[in-house]
Length: 212
Image (cartoon, rainbow, N blue to C red; front, side, top):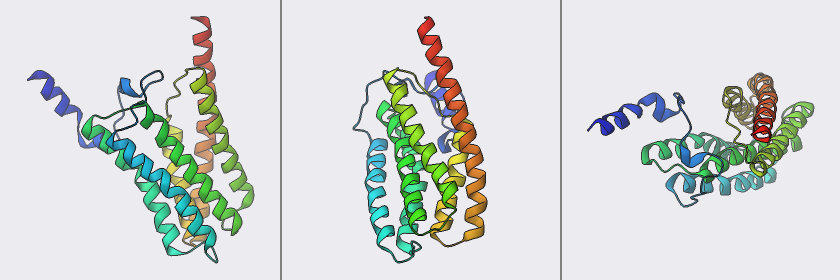
C-alpha cells in the first residue's frame, strides 16, 4: 500500500507535464541501459521522425515557404514532443532509445526549419547559420558522449531555449516577421548558453571517468 501511494503521489500534474523534473533520471534512460526500442513513447518518436522529411519536402515545394500545411505540420511535430514524455510517464515505459531519439528529432526539425527559412530568406541568414552550426555541433557532441559513455543531462537553458527557437521558425513559416525575430534572438541566447554548459559538464564528467 505504501509503495502504491508513493507512486501515485509522484504522478502529479507538474510531473506528468514535465514541469517537475526533480530527482534522478529513470535508470532505464541512462548511459549503458538497454535501448528498449519497442515502446509506446518510442512509437510516437518514430512517427515524429518520419514527419520531418515530409515537412521539409512540402515546405521546399511551396512558392514562398509560408504555406499553411507545412507550418501546421511543423507545429504538430514540435508540440508532439510533449506526447512521448507524457506517454513515458503514464506507462512507465522509459528507455535509453527514447532518451536518444527525443532530442535527435528536435534537432532534425530545427535543421529542417532552418533549411526552409534559409531558402526563402524568412529569417536573417547569419542567425540561421549560427543556429544550424549549434545543432550540428550538439549532434557531434552527443555522439562523442555516447562513445565515451558520458551521460549528458539536458540543462534548463537548453530545455527553455528550444521553444523560442521552434517558435521563431514557426512564426517565420507563418510570415509573422517581428515575432519570429524576437523569438529567434531570445532562443539563440539560451541555446548558445546551454551549449557552453553542455561542453563544460561533458569535460568535467570525462575527467571524472578518467581519474576513476
